[in-house]
Amino acid sequence: MKIRQFQVDAFAHCLFEGNPAAVCPLDDWLPDHLLQSIAAENNLSETAFFVRSARGFDLRWFTPVAEVDFCGHATLASAHVLFDALGHAEAAVAFETRSGRLTVEREGDLYAMNFPAQPPRPCALPEVMVAGLGATPSEVLAADDYLAVFESEAQVRSLEPDFQNLRRLDLRGLIATAPGDDCDFVSRFFAPRLGIDEDPVTGSAHCELAPYWSGRLGRLRLRARQISKRGGEVICEMVDARVVLKGGAVTFMAGEITVQS
Image (cartoon, rainbow, N blue to C red; front, side, top):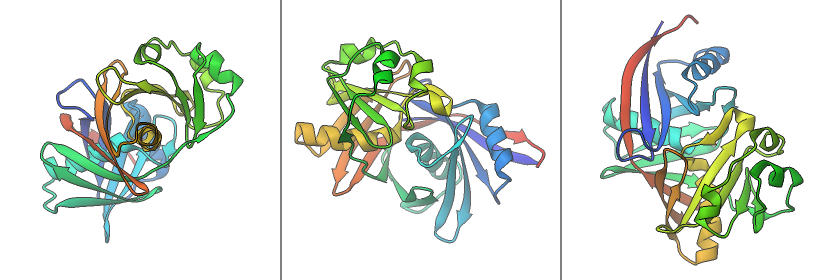
């Protein structure tokens, strides 16, 4: 069986920045174990698979070790493949996912993704977080992930996580964030429980970050940078209970994989 596969740098304006995702358009769904094996073979933070449906496209995301409920950068990458390589002619693309209906519009050289906001709430500081980060945040909140707030960008940059300890956290992952030196806020994202020690740029994390920083800074439009080694920029806009995330995308590779079902 031959399957087309694209590798896209999402939240990027040029190659070798942002977050790489693999995208596989399918005619019909393959068995789950095969989808997971393809994702493990790719060994990227996410591999996305989509199938055309009556309402648009059904979309699923897999890390190297598990299927996940929500992924921003692989959604952006999937929309980029549809618009840029597969000739999607409508103004927007709609994806049906585990997290509901997600829409993506093309805006010049950016893609605007409309996602549900996930405002984090204050919580107690897990002891293992301090051991895992090697530092104590000034504030801790939680939604799908823990949000560890620091005072400066330099503190976030200097973190040297112990991933064995972070793997013991009971939520999906951990976001470290602080005010940015030349943007509204910066972040890093760690999810060793999902086989991702540090994710380069994480769209879903900004569904938690944007409500927090919007409330703290008193603005609806924010410019963010994820300061991983690759790095990437995310424009965030709060619209009622939704977050619109905007970013660019660049195709690194288009090819074909051969699998046995």
